[in-house]
Image (cartoon, rainbow, N blue to C red; front, top):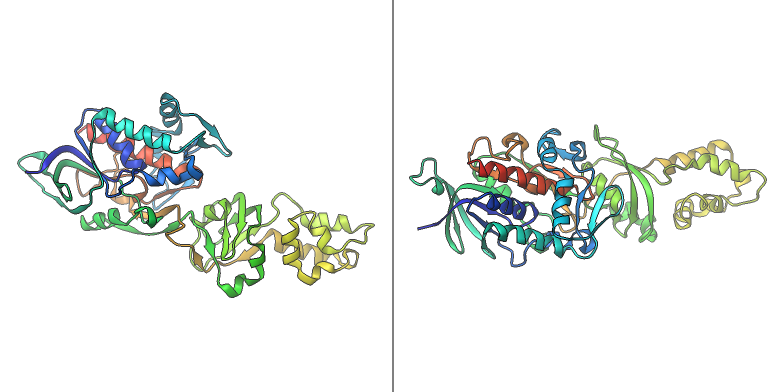
Amino acid sequence: MPQRFDAIVVGAGAAGLFCAGVAAQRGLRVALVDHASRLAEKIRISGGGRCNFTNLEADRPERFVSGDPRFARGALRAYGPRRFVALVDAYGIGWHEKHRGQLFCDDSSERIVELLRAECDRGGVAWFRPCAVREAERHDAPADPRDRFVLHTEAGELAARALVIATGGPSIPKIGATDWGHRLAAHFGLRVVEPRPALVPLTFTSQSWQPFTELAGLALEVGIATPDTPGAPAFVEDLLFTHRGLSGPAVLQASTYWRTGEPLSIDLAPGARIGVALRTAREGTRQQLGTALAAVVPKRLAQVWLGDEGESKLAELGNRALDALAQRLHDWRVTPAGTEGWRKAEVAAGGVATDELDPRTLEARRVPGLHFVGEVVDVTGWLGGYNFQWAWASGWCAAQALSRG
């Protein structure tokens, strides 16, 4: 005989832990199943070990990428950032705002993991971990409604009237991430948008990047956009040159919108007027071009960008030449060859298609009782706490639906 529950949550990450805790505290008998030996490792390593647990502006659906831009709106407004902050405060966890609404723990991300564990324990959640799921079945009209879903696991058979999938995507496989949730959705006949790495560094061919390899380690604030992606926003964030390409918050943000073969447009001096600055420096001076440009952009960048041209006398250059140089720096067009892949991606874009799910409950329209929450769904937030807020909001909405039966 299987062990029976009102709901089984598969995946003990941010969305799964939160959903299980909320549902259990509403009186449901909940089982939480996860194959990993260490709890919520993705939370633990996030934010440099301090967990960027939400963003004060994370209730803005336009800051999420999805097949349906409106899909996340209801959940994000039903359970907004301030509600999770109130829970953090209730546990006495110190936090601070870093910038642009990003909230981090003052000490360790372990505090958020412990909060979620405590919320589950308050509701009496039954833990099954580490415990792999070998097979999942659904029965249309079982004698006991709790036998609607049956999981064959390493701990034996578990059964419940509702099943919540919170297994995330394949980003950062070294901590145990897989595409199990996507495969299960396909098994039940649901459409899955092909997952791809997001919030990920971008790479270039060795030949095309060779002139910039000596800039590895250089960081500067830039403006960045994906001009071939309709409706994609431009970001002003820090960029980091690497030996293989570009990283840093600016590139991670743009990577969610970027598609293979498309260029990036990078403004290497946002807010500056390089052409005006160079023409002004030319007046009454014997400066070299490289010296003048290094007053506007980092010296290393000016040296690599100009090469031998940097030794040119500024006074000998006309307005047209200076304006053309400024234009290239304000709109540097580069086409990445690819990304650093799943091993460096913070999240997966794509996932269970939003048109398969009810946005109010995260329940599959064609498979009653089956819910998907968090990263496994085709909803990807900006860098800076947005994806954690989607985990809390989607998990909370699914938990409300579970408690309504």
